[in-house]
Amino acid sequence: EAQVTQNPRYLITVTGKKLTVTCSQNMNHEYMSWYRQDPGLGLRQIYYSMNVEVTDKGDVPEGYKVSRKEKRNFPLILESPSPNQTSLYFCASSTGSGYEQYFGPGTRLTVT
Amino acid sequence: AQKVTQAQTEISVVEKEDVTLDCVYETRDTTYYLFWYKQPPSGELVFLIRRNSFDEQNEISGRYSWNFQKSTSSFNFTITASQVVDSAVYFCALSERGRNQGGKLIFGQGTELSVKP
Image (cartoon, rainbow over all chains, first blue to last red; front, top):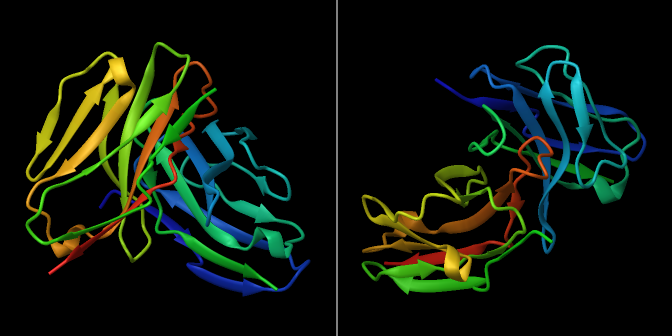
């Protein structure tokens, strides 16, 4: 089954404790992105990748890192999480620019 | 500037009613793409449709239909004979060819549709 998977689905952590949210897709897509969804602010792009070893900042990259060492994986790293990073995070993948993005199930992160 | 506006924050209908969700977009690109996504209460984002700026043909898929009008910069979504399972938040989104950003989707704020039995 074609899908995007994310882990963990739910995470409660404390300020400053490094964490990684994994994302994997099995559709051989070149493009991958991370978005966060917040009430009143909607969905915003954090980082994106257009191929292996090619990543760039989206609209709200502060406090996040990403890597793309393999085509299928695109982990999101929070080196020192803060409460303002409490959010619902989505990973997405697509075949290219202008094509539909397929989203993972979401990761609900709470930073206390 | 690029922007997507979904003026209807919440809509409530009774089952079997028809309902139209409005979407108005702004872009300076001549080549762009429009999408609708559904976010049911379980939280995932489900792709519904994609349209490019050169294809103004309306589309029908079962009870769903979409009306794309470049003249009014609108891409409206109609559900015919709504069902309780249609209850969800619906997002309209825009992707511009010029400002690639990995095919970034610019989302509207969403319309929460509640279909009551």
